[in-house]
Amino acid sequence: MKKIHFKNLEEYFNQEVIIEGFVDSIRDLPYVQFMVVRDVTSKVQVTIEKNEENASLNKIVSDLTLDSTVKITGTLIKNEKVKLRGMEVIPKDIIVTSRCLEEMPINYKDPSSSLLDTRLNYRFLDLRNEKNILMFKVQTKLINAMRAFVLANNFVEIHTPKIISAASESGADVFAVKYFEDEAYLAQSPQFYKQMAMCSGFERVFEVAPAFRAEKSNSYRHATEFTSFDIEMSYVDSLEELMDFEEDLFIAGLKAVKEAYEDDIKRLFNVEVNVPTKPFPRIKLEDLYIELEKEYGFKMDYEDVGDMNAESEKLASKYIKEKYGHDFVFITDFSAKKRAFYHHRNNGVPVGADLIWKGCETTTLAIREHNYDILVKQAKEKGLGKDVAFYLDFFKYGCPPHGGFAFGVDRITMLLLGMPSLKETMFLFRGPNRINP
Image (tube, rainbow, N blue to C red; front, side, top):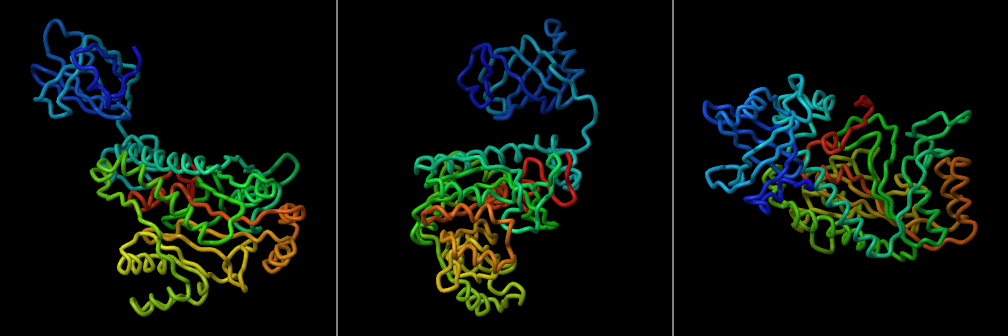
């Protein structure tokens, strides 16, 4: 008999079934035993009367420990008196496939009972929590819907190297690794390789893969290793075209999540899944500064002028929500000093934007500079030389106009579900002070 996921048990009433899962709870009463078993999809009650016929089964259940795993053969019946889904399995055979041998070091059913660092030490147990399992189902649905969207729009999936010979984008914030007798680096992003694909004539590419940043940041939204969803597309003539595409991408992802998990997200996270409408509001950075000072008395710190910081991002979202009733906003016209050398500039202003969602930057979009001479000049302005020489070579042999963006999968999961930190939305978090488990 093929494995039956518990969510599909309604299709098997009055039939013999074989179920496998974790023991979630046990009630051992004078005349009956109740055991709740769970798999990744749902839970079901197993009911064993205490009598001579069931003596061997009663002994197995009496000796069971919570979070052991079992394989049960029995008959599934309807029973409206059972609060859990109105059904129960009456077993004829119970096999203990593994036994939980020790007391749990954390109570994964009550995350508030342990410090976050302790939970991360035992992440393999913490992930058994129902919310965590749902979180990764939501993330899977979101990313697969976005993947389906780009594939439907003629994108090619690429897999770029993560061990590289020169530091990407800049020499700072990279992890150096020994590569046989030489030194290599872990890639900060696939940025240069995405653009190489444009030079290769691929026209539209995407990648969902790890990226590495050697930043000693302990903020709620940074990690030293994260999963990045990258987009690059040729023959993009305007920033508006790029923003329009990202709007459609986010709408496709959030619509799929809402259709699949809206009720579960509301029940477990107390969050409404809002599918945004187009167009997302746009505002120039200088205009935003004016509005934030007028509305909230906010003035940008001197060192951040020409850019955004965490406080301004939160206020920008507040302002846009109050004025437009929207959760998203594109902020444009950043300072060239604050943007990468490969951004195309119009009269000295980078042609790009940051997408802010729920008070946090999710994406930097940009039209790229594809003219070799200008790229060389802008790289020199940033003090970049031989580290980007291989990249500059791409543009000597013809390259179409192009642009793109990327976002962190873990960060958008955090924002979608209203989680306080991406430490909780990553399968295993990596930060300046954490490299285990």
